[in-house]
Amino acid sequence: MKFEIKNYIAGELIAPIASQYLDNFAPATGELYSLVPDSEAQDVALAVESAQRAFPAWRDLGAEGRSAYMLRLADVLERDIEKFALAESKDSGKPLSLARTMDIPRAIQNIRFFATAILHAHTETHDASPAMLNYTLRQPIGVVGCISPWNLPLYLFTWKIAPALASGNCVIAKPSELTPMTAYLLAELCQEIGLPAGVLNILHGLGGKVGEAIVSHPGIKAISFTGGTATGSVIARHAAPVFKKLSLELGGKNPVLIFADCEYDTMLATTVRSSFTNQGQICLCGSRILVERSLYERFRQDFVQEVQKLTVGNPLHESTRLGAVISAGHQQKILGYIALAQEEGGKILTGGKAVKPEGCENGWFVEPTVIEGLPYDCRTNQEEIFGPVVTIQPFDTEEEALKYANSVRYGLASVLWTQNLSRTQRITQAIESGIVWVNCWLMRDLRTPWPLALRFKTSSKESYPLILSKTFCGK
Ligand code: NAD
Image (cartoon, rainbow, N blue to C red; front, side):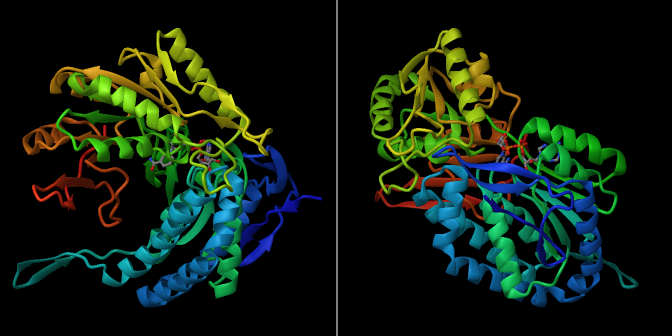
């Protein structure tokens, strides 16, 4: 009998009403190790009723009251960090070291950040005339739906639910059916801290079934979604006719622009990370590496050498840098793109194959793969692969680099490596992406949802981060 994950509705951990379950596999071993509720519309209805009942009291608790519950939740999550990191690693195949240092700490930070941000929230007033004062009142909308993907399970799940809860909304949340475990464990912690029943409800199951039921339910006023672009479009089609508020964070095909004047060693080490962290399964990973021609040969040689040092292996081993990809189907998709790249004329410089690390022979692993020789507009360079696969291409001018960078239909993130401030200004304005990291990657300040992060080296060789509050418009 496999462990049965439960839904969290009205403060209780309960089985799905129809008692149907889905299989949950450990990607590193291929083991079927737990069962996930295959929830449906009737479970959503139950959860919405409980959230509607909970809403007035949660709203009226005020910012300090809600903040106190959330801070307690963050504290117990921090206490259990090792348990959650192990669960995340097993459920997703990612290295335990990554779950321990990135995923779970960021989940804790998400909850703490919004729990304290709400204490300092303020709104504008406009003193228009002696007889009139206009002000903006921010109020919770009621019951909201939060749907998250499998690549950073608890990290993105908490990023969605924390601001909604802090603002006084009650939440119906659905993690990915491929990585349900840490959301389930979080429900146990909500019980432990005595979070009022119905404030947070967690439903498990398939996107096309329980996910669509969440999106379609008339009692859910807003949807916050992170996931694939095609799914986002389906959700928008359901939500738009009934005028639900909608936040969609979707896919990417992010360029990395490397100029010859960059600080080489930092660039090289960071580009290895921005390519292959979490097996390349982060929407913000750079997958198209564009290198100024005068630096190209040196970069190619060093980059391939560094990539070959990355250990693909058992996620529980400290030396492992790449774990398993999420599923057998996703492994096949990635290998299919590697085959396509070769058909399109690409040359594999390293990687390209599935691997079976010792002790994980039935798991789903792919070597970190570097491909060169492809045109910027081929499918390999235009479509999101979402795996450990990058292409490298030389360019001669800024205009050419920008043309390649901006050629895709995505506009999520980009990375620029240069020490030239004028060039930085030109490129960060011309590049079509919501986030531009300059001389760094994945640095985030949660106060700026789409930050422009800059890091320059000073003449004294001290580097310092400078975060500009400039917001770029995505495509
Ligand atoms: P996905 O779109 O398949 O699934 C995401 C979530 O949506 C899951 O919980 C899934 O069950 C649910 N879902 C699927 N179909 C649905 C439907 N019709 N209605 C309602 N819910 C539905 O994405 P995924 O494969 O889990 O994640 C990978 C994708 O997520 C990649 O494209 C990646 O770029 C993107 N992503 C984006 C960001 C970002 O912040 N922009 C962050 C992480 C991942």
